[in-house]
Amino acid sequence: MQKLFDLARRAVRVRMADWILAALVLLVLVLAMAPQQLPVTLYKLCLVALAALSGWWIDRSLFPYARPERFLEPLREQSDKPLGDTAFGDLAGALYFSEGTAQGLSAQDAALLGRAAMLRRALIVAAAMLAVGLGA
Image 1 (cartoon, rainbow, N blue to C red):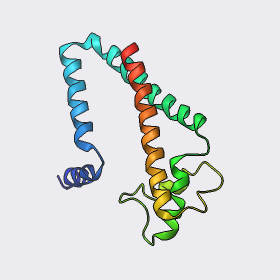
Image 2 (tube, rainbow, N blue to C red; image 1 turned 90 degrees about the vertical axis):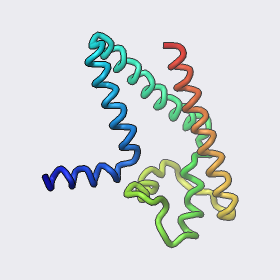
Image 3 (cartoon, rainbow, N blue to C red; image 1 turned 45 degrees about the vertical axis):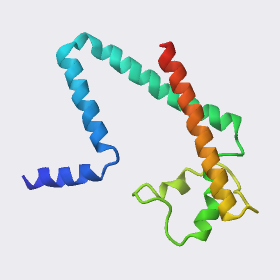
């Protein structure tokens, strides 16, 4: 019983655990009500995941010098605490794909450009996912 409580306590800390649980419940409902639709559901999920990955690569290809992670460096240097409030906060350094940083910018300008780059990337990924979702 204690193991079950420990597992539940860890699951609460997982981001979007409630949505994962809802998706699994709905998947079980699809399996119970119409098992022939399960391959279609998995196919659609695969298409959406590939569209998200394609949108991310499109953004990386179109804007090689304006990646969101490039604008985090001045904020890291200015702050004494690590970015992010999760265990994945230190992952930002591991995902640093580009050489160089946003040198010469104030931390406020870098933060603004970083937000704009994140918004641009989110719009490109959303557009790719919407295009695939409407077309499939």
